[in-house]
Amino acid sequence: MRAFSGSQQRHRESEVLARQMGPEEQLKCQFLLLKVYCQLGSSILKELPLRAYREETCHCIRELMVFNEIKKKLNQGSYPGVKSFVLEVYHIFHKHRSCKKCSYFVLKGMQLQAEFEKNFQKVFAIQYTNESSSQL
Image (cartoon, rainbow, N blue to C red):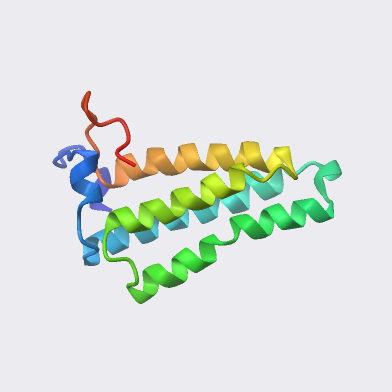
């Protein structure tokens, strides 16, 4: 993907978030979502401690699987811009963080959010300045 080339022009986060969801932006958002799925499958589920297998755990996993709805909306072209996609992803992270049922998944959800933010910066070539430390 072109986003990882070292010579790519850098952008402010506010500019990226203001973009309409064109084909290139949609592809980048799909890639970000794929990275989330990879993290969900590899780190969270493989490291699940035995004591965490309870009914509450199933609830927490179901909450994280709401990413399937985002995938569907993204593929249908339901997001008018990059910001609406990013806000919905952050909404899931926030909602999951407020779930008090399983602290193990809250921690993993926070790690997943940090990874999403890092990947967002890479994929969209975000250049941070003093005025932009998360426009959301």
